[in-house]
Length: 161
Image (tube, rainbow, N blue to C red; front, side, top):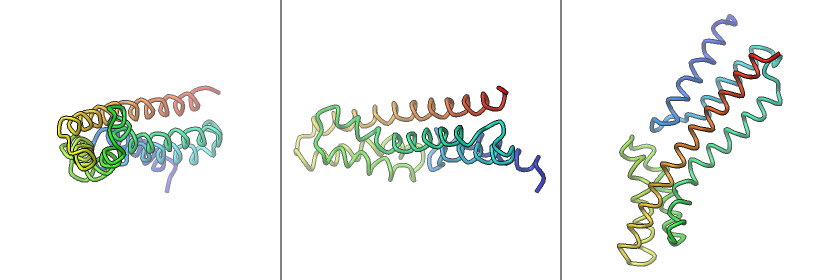
């Protein structure tokens, strides 16, 4: 393949990945990283060094962990039990396969079910669910911020000699 096709593929992966940070069932940040890795590789790591790619990889790993943990931490901040914490995490994972509604409701429902099983207290279970939903929203915003930070690092590496 020609170098232009590789760069086009890299750009396409980055754009789809940026959209995927918000869209359900699209591994957004890993796709952004894959595009940046291809871009660095095609350029023989001259402008975007191996160390820059390693930094981008670390940020990608942080974003993936953040995506799974954010809702569960939101539930935990409300004083929720470990079952609500686990339920929010499971709800986030399952919700990712059910579209945008699943992504929004998954952490909430998972935390509510987990907390209700632990305490049989519906008001507390609801608080845990709200905490999980807020955690998911904050996690998504943080994941998007990490993605744009990665993009800034990548573009800076290309533009700065």
